[in-house]
Length: 221
Image 1 (cartoon, helix red, strand yellow):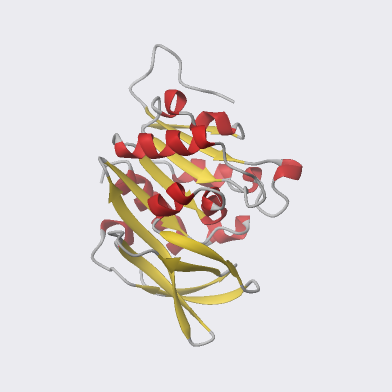
Image 2 (cartoon, one colour):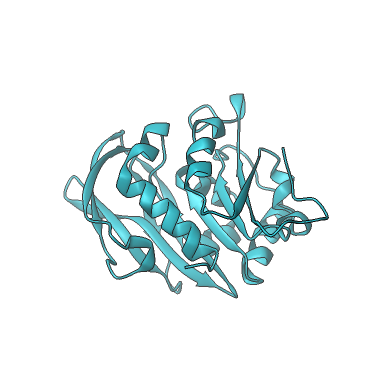
């Protein structure tokens, strides 16, 4: 793992955190890290780690952006990591959560509030109709409704949380949120539901969403 050194270059720094091997039976980090690297804006450096201690505030503050792809549905998140994430965002950090990264909220009420929604499981992988809910938002610029093969996570949006729904999907006649963003303290957060397989990152519309989410959440839009 590479981390920024003391003689930090002019490049902006991002950290991608997830799991490898047996710790990620369904969402291994190595299936997506090269895709995320390809989508980083010019002038950025991406560092990749499976060390959850990178979520400590003392470490996170070295980065302009934190991207989370953790497969932690069966793990108990350390309260220190919860505090680190929340403090990071409140103080102006950018947090981009991809697909299974929502697993961090499983044992943390505070992170559910930060994310603004409660994960409730998923139906079988299949074709989903994605509809653009906020076409005027910078994250959705140039993106039109599309169909993609994906694992359909279901969420209950929490009351009292200000958010912008960016995209929704329909399944069995019901509509579910598939992407949203919010401001939290001085920082910004984005959640994008797609990302179950490496093939998810081949859809041009989704690749554009990730790239534009990075810019928006890091405040470089």
